[in-house]
Length: 310
View 1 (cartoon, rainbow, N blue to C red):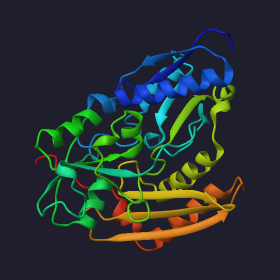
View 2 (cartoon, rainbow, N blue to C red):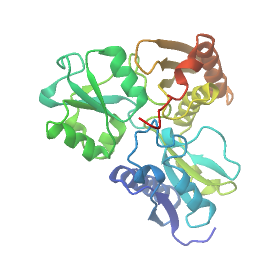
View 3 (cartoon, one colour):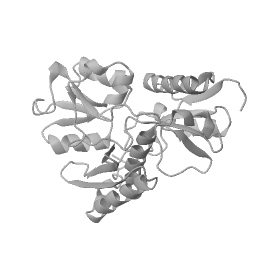
View 4 (cartoon, rainbow, N blue to C red):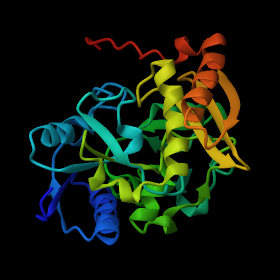
């Protein structure tokens, strides 16, 4: 590759620009390569439909990949949880930088927590998984489907339109908005989206050297294990599936959970594999998914049926 500036494609939201800016800085620090950000609008940025109806897999990644394929950019940066689980024939994830906090948070009025919100409180989320978790934990709450960036969602609480919203800790941290958090939701009881808090730096196959210097192998392994569950369940990024993997004492430990959309059914699987065995992420993810499928997970992860005439 030439010494020209490395063109890094990104979505245009404040969070995406912050995340991509951090990746660009890390690449420059590791390689000395000058970078420039190229902003790309995705289908997910244009659509105002609920995530469960707006197209699912590839919603936030397709336009970025089109630009990479066309040679308009050299590298693209995704929130790893948005990336389809199937391998792409032309692209590869060259780096998964060290992960931010993978937890979800509650951002509520008056310092309230999930346990102290009053019955009937209005809690906003655009995630079917978070909605199912809210219903499983507090069936007396009113779950409100919302879209919009982090600032928009926090604005619903600050204006009094909602009593609380559920947001990823990683995004709030990257944007300097952690003061809005009234409760960090524990991963044991509230596993988050597979690969939440992790970024994926994608390149054309053969260009891995552009970003491999910032790869963090423990984060890559944990994210791969979580995503392996999603792949084996054949569930998209909007399915009510939570997963969390950690590496501890030479083991890759994975917990995965599938919810019914109304929160009344919850299935859990936990498995471990030796690490750094390169086969460990796929192995532990497949075992967890097999457990979940044996207990009826396929029914729970099926897309909801919508009446187009409603």
